[in-house]
Length: 90
Length: 205
Image 1 (cartoon, chains in turn blue, green):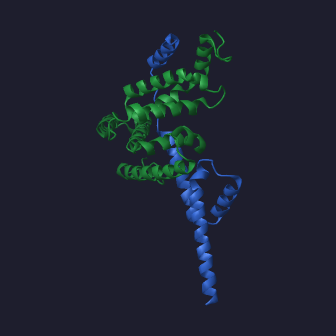
Image 2 (cartoon, chains in turn yellow, cyan; image 1 turned 60 degrees about the horizontal axis):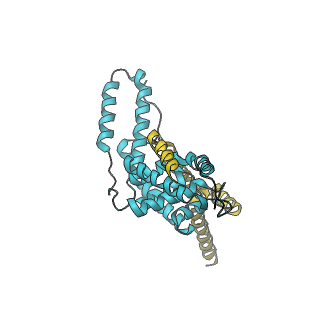
Image 3 (cartoon, chains in turn cyan, green; image 1 turned 180 degrees about the vertical axis):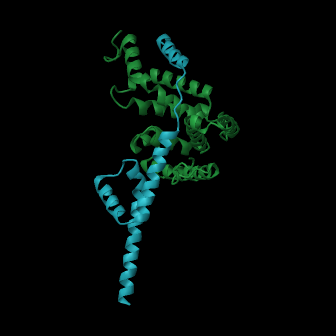
C-alpha cells in the first residue's frame, strides 16, 4: 500500500513538472522567461526526453519561419510619395 | 506667436527628425501591411496612411523611444478601422502558380541533374518559402499578426501587448494557438511535399 502511494506521488510530480515546463516552453523560445524559469526548464530537460524533443521542435518552427518567409522590397515610389506628402503638409 | 508651446519644432527640424527616426522602419512596416492585407496596393495605401498619421502626431512621439513599435501600432489601428472591412477573405492561396512554376523547372532539369542541381535546390527553396507564406497567410488575421510580430519582427510580449492593445496573457495564449494552427498546416504541407526533415541525404550517385 505504502509503496504504491509513493510511486503514485512520484509519477504525479513528474507530470506536474512536464506540465510546468510545457507551460513556459514558448516563453523560453521567445526569450521571455526569467532566470529561475530558465534554470528550472533546462534542468528538467536534462532528464526528460519528451520535453527535450518538444523544445527542439518548437525552436525549429520559429527558425524555420524566420528563414523561409521572405520579405518584400518596399516600392521605391512609396518612399518618395511619403517624403513628398510630408514635405507638402503644413 | 512662434513659440506657443516651447518645444514646438520648426517644420524643417520636424521633417528632418521624422525622416531620421521613422523612415528606417518602412521595410518591416510595409511587410507587416502586406501580410495583413495580402495585397500590394492596399499595403501601399496602409503604409502611406500610417506615415501621414505619424507625421500629424509626431509631437507626441518621444524621441529615442521605440519608433518601430509606435508605427506598428498606428498601422494596426488603421488596418482595423479602415481596411479590415474591405480586405478579401479568405486568403487567396496561389497553389496553381507555385505548382506550374515547379513543374516547368522539373522538366527543364531532366537529363542534366548535376548541372541544374543548384537551380533545383534554389527552386525548392523558393517553393518552401511560398508554401510557408501561404500557410501563414491562411491563418486568421489575429493569429497571423502575433506570429509576424513575434517570430518575424522579434517584438517582445510587452511590445506586442502595446501594439495590439491586449494584456500580455492574451498575447501568450494567442501566440500559442496561432503556432498550433501553423504547425498543423505545415505538417500537412510537409507530407504532401514528401519533405522529411530527418532524411535529407542525397540518394543520387
